[in-house]
Length: 347
Image 1 (cartoon, rainbow, N blue to C red):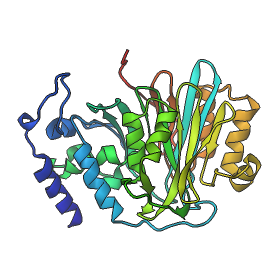
Image 2: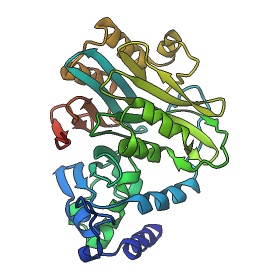
Image 3: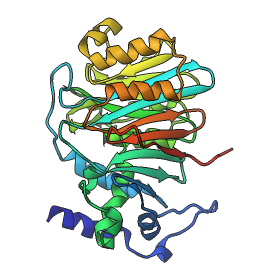
């Protein structure tokens, strides 16, 4: 019943007619083009979809953000988050390949549909991001392309739910669960759910420094309005990356001091590399692998790392090329099937 009302509210808010949408001077849509967006949905494989969002999604982001701020997903207060096994790394030692690797891992037993979402906002950068489709109502085994139109309206929420992606500047970001801590909300700052931070970075950050500035503009929360239990790795083709993590109530940035950086599901701020190695075998393996070659790694090397840190509940393993603005992805821990996506050349 709740999902039904979400469908109806989206239908009323955004409408169904393409002719209600207006064009800017540069030909980009100012309002959501609902029909064109939904009709762009393509099933790439059994559990992998692709969709392009046409038009402005700012009102959708605000609506979904408000809904999520009223929820709670339960806080994990331990040093690590035992329910998740996400692994992320940036690597810059190869002059021809600035790489960002990401293993997006669900809790044990979860299976989900994955979708690549393309966006091209009028006031920002184009990007492509991955989303977990269960977050907006679509369960495994569903052929979403075959659903009636009104049951596809929740697809319009997809730009909000991005845990990782890359934009046309090569800025790449990804999330991983970590222990939850109380945050100190600052008056005058908007409170946003953590996935909206990734969306803001994708849309408006030209480099890591700008991504940090964006993070500092907001009170960032999850699993509820008063806590944050997720940290972020962000990188750009210049060779700079940073971990954005809550500490002492504030978001702090830890900049890479080597041509690689790694995060998993244990804290980074104020924690030595040796302590992080002891806390997480995946961190230990990734860090040692990259250190052994001084960050001189390519696509194949990154893929091999993701093979070795993934498991049966890995939803996607993605290797982003920050110079070429491309991503190679493997779904459901199946490295026999490779899928390649790229952003259009903006030069």
